[in-house]
Image 1 (tube, rainbow, N blue to C red):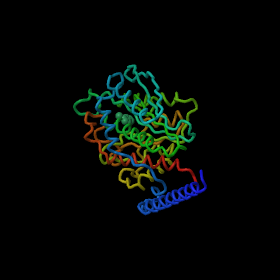
Image 2: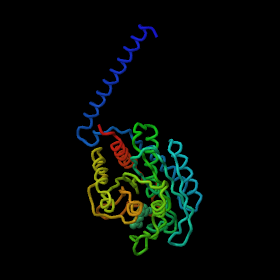
Image 3: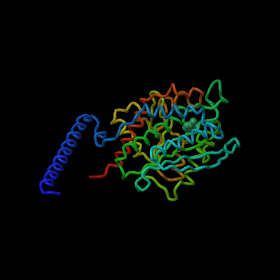
Image 4: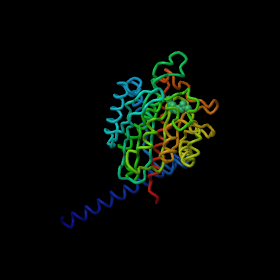
Length: 343
Ligand code: AHN
Ligand code: ZN
């Protein structure tokens, strides 16, 4: 290169660098201004969570029909989840297992595990169950029918699929590893069992119990985990669940503070005292010994789950993109907070 040419190149490089600097300093000043009321949200920038996309992932699952183990919709939906994660560039590990239910059936079940940034040492585990309950035993009229499970199953999976899509699209945090587990056979349990709070959990949570004893990678651990359960209903309320507080209170408080800072305090409420002794986070905490919290819809005034829980009315019409946005955007910020290298 001639001297003159290289002088021009040097000057061009200088200006490119200077304008980049200017661009970033303006950008961070703008964002500081926007977030003046929200100090925790100010600390990190995270990409946008698209609630319509999450909604579409829920609709697609519900469209297969109830995803009850040992039925065709279950197999078809499982295949769909594997393909979807792979299409976002995630590595997928399928974990087949054959549990026996409380009523003596042998199930063809599988946990589906997505891995993002396999090499990263610092990992966060996100989970939700993907199966549907085979009997709508809380339904006044159709107790023998299967649950459509738009909220109780598909909603958490839909939020996590959207997170997987965004993390592929904006993978500017190579220092953070994320694992998503879609647990199977969570909901084939005996609601009438006198004590679901025993070790077998009334036959619920078979997938998480299996995984906690047979992790997909020997010596697998995670910094912490977050379980989503029924995160799609309109006006959902997520009190600070008791087992989560007991095993991972600091994580609960961090996630709730982030949700509030982003303006979602109506969902992430401060109530404590309600315990869900039967859910997938229990085995992860007690057997796998990974601290895991549960973001679960519980009405603080009645202590009951969302209105259409385990009924044939657990359908798309009760799914609200605003709730999906509150949960998904909060999770994205939590992940980006974890992965921002200390300066
Ligand atoms: C109880 O039945 C007490 N817990 C079940 C947890 C669950 C079922 N979550 C969704 N479906
Ligand atoms: Zn359920």
